Image (cartoon, rainbow, N blue to C red):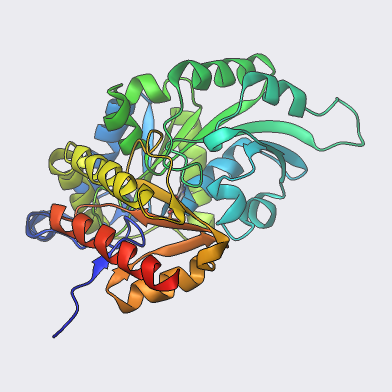
Length: 348
Ligand SMILES: Cc1ncc(COP(=O)(O)O)c(C=O)c1O
């Protein structure tokens, strides 16, 4: 009998729904290099309006959106103040150094958060020995922080301090959608104080590709030039922008379901001997599981789970991540808990 697979590796594994495929097929198209693609133009205008920014630019990936933002805000020799567990530090191929000549001043803090005091303490003296502090970058939700949603006041105070100190601010909002839904704040409230904001359509919203970078007209004009330089300009991009527009209209509100699934998963997993989850702080769709050494390491657990049809990823030696998304049902959650319990029982 074929083992049914529950794919919890990431919210990027989703396939376009039939409605999304129809929207892609029916999207009016043009050559976006000429500025002729009506679907891209409409998406950019809608995103800018939704997030309260002057302008927006559609780009292929979240990584490119972040890297373009960094290039817009910095010069070689500049330093970026960022949490040490952030995506731009861990998972962007060293792009900030390679593409913009920047180093990181890395701060620590629970769940991917830091404070305005951390910002002040990280700013380099105005002295030729040091890198030049130029940009503060935040991530909301914070991936390695456990899909955590920044407390609004803390986020605002970090941005206020950064600006008062003459620094720019960027939000890596790959999963800002989850922050919007989980916090009940609207997009403008969460992102008002950032000079630039990136958001991904391929995480949680179910699109095959695409992200957007938003900011002032000036910064987006510069981003447009840098996107070309980085090789990210595409032609009949409305095929992808059509998917993104569909996702905002039809697949944003349903993130509530993913968050409930994650909470149920964390609650069930937390009852398994040798595994622990921070159930209370599982606020969105990412479930992080700490594994007691008596069970072995995360990679071994994942290999065994894979054999039993549950796909997950070990992000650290003793930490595994389960991610809920639109392809995951109530029954999948029950099955994932049961299979994980059985697998751990065998390993014990
Ligand atoms: C927080 C965060 N930022 C940026 C990205 C990069 O997105 P992409 O894979 O589209 O480059 C990811 C990807 O998972 C992410 O989790």
